[in-house]
Amino acid sequence: MRWVWILSIALLPAPGWGLTVDEAVARALARHPATAAAQHGVAAAEARADRVGSAWLPRVSAVGQAVIRGPIPTLTIDTGLTPPGASAPLAIEREIGQRYTASGTLEVAWRALDFGERAAMADAAEAGVAASRADAAARAVELGWAVRQSYAAAAFFQDVVRVSVQAAQTAQKDVADAQARVAAGLGAPVDVAAAQSRLAERQAQLADGQAGVAQAHATLRLLLGLPADAPLTLDDGLEALAAAAPGTPGAAPDALKARAGAAAKAAEAQAVDRSFWPTLDLMGSAGVADPRTFVETEPGFTWQAGARLTWPLFDGDQRRRHLRQLEAEAQALRAAADAADEGAARARAEADTRTAAAQAQLHTAQARVDAAQTWLTAAQAARDAGAATALDLERARDRLDGARVAVARARFDAARAQADRLKADGISQRVEK
Image 1 (cartoon, rainbow, N blue to C red):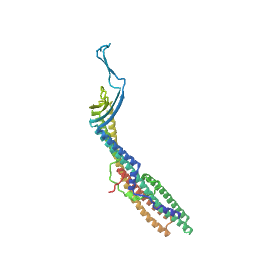
Image 2 (cartoon, rainbow, N blue to C red):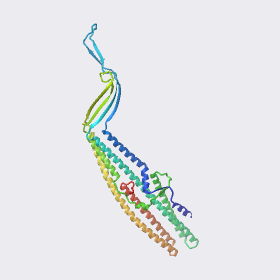
Image 3 (tube, helix red, strand yellow):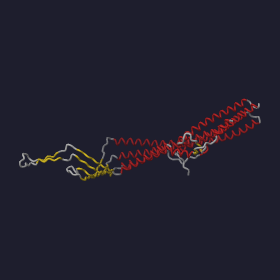
């Protein structure tokens, strides 16, 4: 009876984290490092857009300087006048400038006119934000798909364990019954061997199922950020996972990301193209200088204002080559977006086909369960009447166990197809309405 007790314990639910599949996805999205990294990427793109938007604001600088010069030039003026008693004409010498100068200035500059370069760069930055958000959505879809696949695997192996436990309990009783019949002279040793063989097969199937449950639970704990030894209970079974309807299809995140990237490249190319035209900057400054001017010796207030027109007529052909590069990169991203759309459509069709196939298999497997149950009932009655052997009964039970596992397998296939459909639709988390 030891195996019966062990197998009964295996069927008891463990306390701990109880989650539906949608709750598991929501928890993973809320705490996974990949989601955090994607959100930081969006924040960085938004900050870049804000930085690019400041190009319309003036620039204000405070400049202070102190300079020592040498030699100081000397201006000599010959007056041509010879004072009384002097042997030579009078000459006047004066230093031009000072050896030490200092100033403090507040400078303001503002680009008053360009030909749309700043607007194009702002458009490129906003497209970059859209690309970052699409990348975050793509990571969320991948994470949600991984959680659903692991959840479905755990539910499947739990069903395998449940079927295996029930079969092993029955096989254990059959072994005891066969041994008792042999001891009473009513059975043959071959019946004992057949019952023991079936028990060993069910025990092996149980061990495989338990290993599958352990692996799937370990993956789920990792995705959900739970401790390695945290008990985990699945509130959704395979039947619920297989019957879950997909949400409203959306655009493939990879396609959205590629198209946003192409828009950013196109806007950047427009900015590069417009950088050929002249720009007009207005400038002004005011401050205190010592000396006030070149020829004065006292400190004082100074100011200046002006405008500067800049026209880069030739830049070594860098602009044209940069444009060609950006246009090629934009074309590549547009093609990648089209490929992503086609891939999503293909994945959606494959998921639908697999769902239909799994539903057909489920219908067949359920019919097999009914037929096997009928066969088992008839085999038990025939054996009790002496018209069937223990081997006939074992075969009927094997057929029923196989049909039950086939039901679980069909539901598992349908659940995985549902997860793939949600991924193809670009859905990370279903919203209940």
